[in-house]
Length: 195
Image (tube, rainbow, N blue to C red; front, side, top):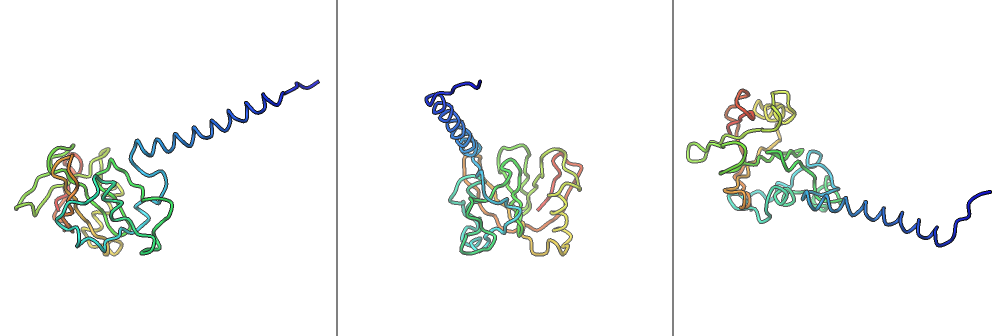
């Protein structure tokens, strides 16, 4: 003979299951909030940055704080681009020194502090920037793309390299504009580029 299950016991189990489902959803939302990145939305790698407003912010502090704020500022607008997604702002690696888009690469530079000492030469017209990460090489995807840009390969002819510098970690990024490749040094720790 089978076990008898009371209506109260069934209701209790059902409530516990729905509570677990709510908790799981809450954990995802909490993780997105704590990590300060969207849980949904396309990767910046598969959408074009909205570069139409570059002139407006050139030489100025971005109105939104941090890398996330800059990415959201230049994210495609749903009415402007077929790349835009209604599922949320674009995702990117907030720990990397760059944000890679289909049509551009944003380079993040700390004027003071950070893991690398960025040298500013010729009145700030030449800047050393480091890829960083785990021993980058010329075979690393971002390095390959930057070098393709430097060689004016057809795949990167329409790519723009844009530099964003923040004076201190507590200040917003300033859009410095387009970069021109000068040289690179794979032997330097962090793989150095000079722009």
